[in-house]
Amino acid sequence: MNKAVKILVIEHNAEDISFIQRVFSLDKGIKSELIFAERIAQALDLLKSNDFDLIMLNLALPDLSGIRIFEEILDKYTELPVIILSNPADEAIALEAVRKGAQDYIIKSETDFYPIKRIINCSIERNRLRINMAQLSITDELTKLYNRRGFFIMTQQQLALARRLCQPVGFFFIDIDGMKDINDFWGHHQGDQALIDVSKILRESCRATDVIGRIGGDEFAISFIKEMNCIENIENRIRNKIELHNKSRLQKHMLSVSIGCYCINVQGCVDIQRALAEADKIMYLEKNRKKCLYRRISNQS
View: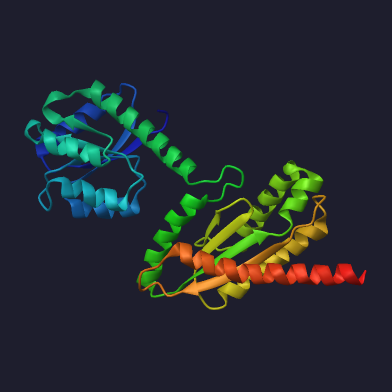
């Protein structure tokens, strides 16, 4: 590793702290910056104000002990790799922590620099791969928006935040008009480009806190915490940007979307699928109005 690995060591035993400092003082291929915390409360404060690459955690601290310490860390910092510092008598608890998500564990009385170097390097790399794989599993490959699974996962987190804020949540259901015609007349490459263009417009139209997903072939959804005028603002931005896109004539085809919106109170049990279905119904009212208008214009001509 080229840059120094910033490690939070959560350990209260003076001899073990001295040993860890001595081991990491040896310059043998791993640069490190160690920050120590002797209590879980102190560690949580440090985690709020620092960007760490790794946590080394003793599961027996003065203010908390056992697997609960690891669960306390994991609950708030799921993306940080954790290595458990264990005594031989506590190896079973260390193994339980690994089963729950810790990257590895070290038996303090049986280690030296080389195992620690290997364990740290492997733990950081495994964690990086885990995060990348997790991101891939919830991301739509073409548009880079959340896929259906990712949209539901991220919306659940948004619902929890909305409950704390005592705010309702809204859902947009968005469908590209005439997608079959684009594919049939201009080819599937242009159909893919239409999906990419709409995705870009949705990203530019939404706030950073809004969740945007491609949940079907040409179907998109947005979930958002409802604030004053945000529904009108988001919808107007989407329609204005589509109009500007069409005026720019960057593509051979014209873009058009139908939009439905549905809002819910989140204090009770929320069925995201049902909320989307309601927004979908409202979206189809617009789509049908467009079809009727097109038929009238065609008949008159």
